[in-house]
Image (tube, rainbow, N blue to C red; front, side, top):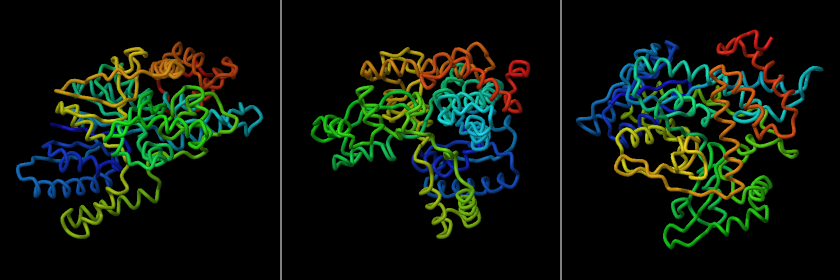
Length: 444
């Protein structure tokens, strides 16, 4: 088995990727990692080799290797799976979007609330920039690993997953988990004096727009959802959660600010001015220091062990390698919050919709659970999915899809759509150095 790792966020994920592959999955594999920086190539190579030596000492007979290189061809050659965790200068480009939308200059549009990561105008520009990277990767994969499975972490995950599937690849995605955080499952069940392991939750919707549709006691089978809906109605779960409950008859789960990105501007909510994209500078310095310690001392020596524990403790909560192994090996599994093509999982939505729901696999086959959405939720999910589909198509340079995306996006409700189209055209011009699929005369 060969696993190819692509994207600037891969180094942050590498500790859990290797742990889940070698220690949890006990899977023999060749790992190939794309890294353009020569100094970082050495850091990651030595770190990976140290972890592999540790795994082989614990599991005799485990065959594993890691190759860190700047050659995409070598990384992709004959890969069985590609894990993508990339973006296009996310933080700096977002800042450019926000400044362009903020209304600082006399001729600026004054649309600060549309400076978003995933939805609205900002999300559309983010999608177009991601398209440059994802579509280039798809072209390389057709040449070097046309049958590879893709595990996609690139935001906006619904739209980048659509790009991979439209290119003909089997793709599963993982976005920000709805299991943890301010309005995650762990926080919600804590309101009921429960722990996540003591409940059985049904979570479904779209990536970044998921809802808690069922909640039972794992031991007694008692229905716990009415207790939470009472709290939502009383605004005990926050005013946005109550608003979404009033609108959609379901409890938003995960960071509710993610939900807000897909909806019209809210008078009492402004998106973050500086959202997090990957690790910060200080966190990166720490990670490199700890990786160097593991690489120099080995993962079995005390200093190396401590550094590895610190790396694992700081790792993001998503586990793409566990998902990759389950798909590649056909393991029986129930993995929450997996992005993929609908295919009947949510029967009220189009089979081609890109959804987020639990992945249930038995005997190597995905078993749809047939989860039903409240009617108001079904309707808005249909609108957002159509917007996602059009945005992904627009990323290929399709001007017609771009115009239609602006026309139907529910996040733009209340705005003059012709004006918004003009704003989008000007912002494409702002990013013309990275948007090669749009001709200059289109936005002059």
